[in-house]
Length: 390
Image (cartoon, rainbow, N blue to C red; front, side, top):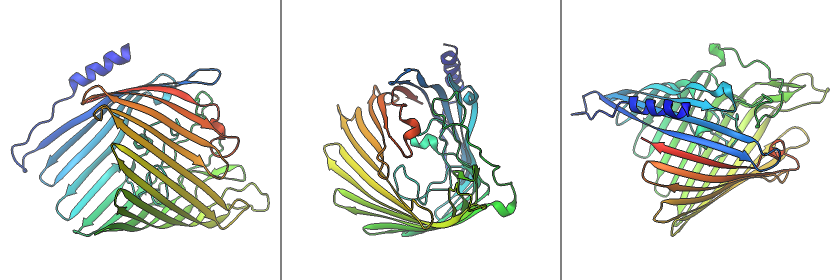
């Protein structure tokens, strides 16, 4: 009850957007939402998997072509106490005109055309505190950096520099139902100029096809376990993506070559962290069938030129349907571990009571005897989410 009263007070305290008189006037925009999410395990011991409430506030201040954007969360987490409090999400200044778009500060940078899979989209790491049982946009971790984009009608060039890298957040606390156990993770790279990330992306928007070429000098954002210790090493990514509409279909493809990628290793033969190139490729198909039906399928394959397990595959399948004059959205989104046979499937029904208030009821299903979903095999859950946007 205290958390609800606190949220209500905060809502009343938010200023309303100020309408500017002209382009050179100072414009202030405020928006955000309040949501509450609760999930109960369907297997024994039938305990709470998640219970959190938050207020998201987003403020934009703009004058002419320059401005600033800040977003933050005020969170109350009944299970993960250390997640309760004020959390800064994005905070950056920007300049944007007909040709240039410059952003400096804490921001989310997304590349590629994959849906929920990471090939070239490896700048912003992921928050796995509650694994994938969150909205995908909430899992992305902002990075502090500089992004400059120059655009023409049929092409754009983007350059990024991240002086201080961010890395995956992993659940290691035994009190967390999503814990993967204690991981002996080593130190993250020191904050030195020579450790910065940098890269660029060249995109083309042509008649009947969009495609991009990208390169990034970065780190493995997920620690690689080698000789019993989680380590981070430098690597270079060379990639490309393509999107082609064909009638009611959209064909998507993405490829990324990771040069000198660190590899997991428990063999005493190698006293140093083994490094090898890996090839990552994805093919996806979206079908907008009409009558508010849509279907999307993807398959991503990884080949590593080292070790015993050189080939791994991961697929996704999304099916959605809107009903009741588009006020009810039904969806099934599944990750399928093709290599080991495991699955994670989120089923949800989102009902819009009005333009601002949504209620979502869903079920997360896990099943795996081995592979990436094994640790969550008993984490199937039902969940309820309420969201009010302002």
